[in-house]
Length: 176
Picture 1 (cartoon, rainbow, N blue to C red):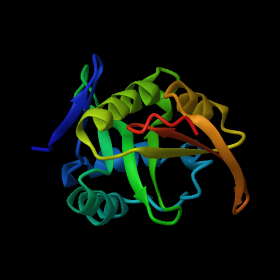
Picture 2: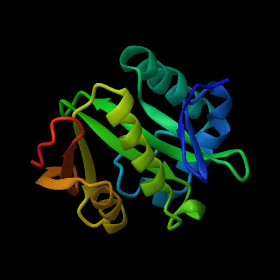
Picture 3: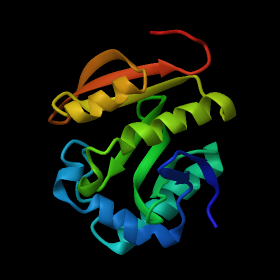
Picture 4: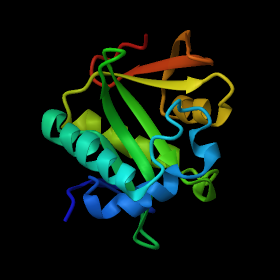
């Protein structure tokens, strides 16, 4: 059984386990899911999904106590995506992120699940500064970051993308 992190009226947020590989493959498969992520092609088989769970998320849970968490729809018991935090060494910060299958877009799950993660982090984790990056054209993702209470920090180029970076401070109360 995977450790439950938190829940909302509609969602359970818990750690991933290897039994979630088919769901991970499912929500990563559609081309539009990875349009703005820069990691298209990284999850194209059940073995890829298992490797992501085993070699990334389970390792991060052990090392940091957090990572990307499974978002489970209470109504069906199915994993519909991920939310939560990643210790992002390439930018030297903790990133908040989310990914859902397109059939679950536009229903408020990204905002709902990550609001619950932010609330959890404020109470249970030793995190202060959290960043969220979104490609400048990805207005839906930018809207989620703003709804979480994040403020624009900077814009930068990564590969072919112009990325807007947002931040929030969970403990120190700083706004920038």
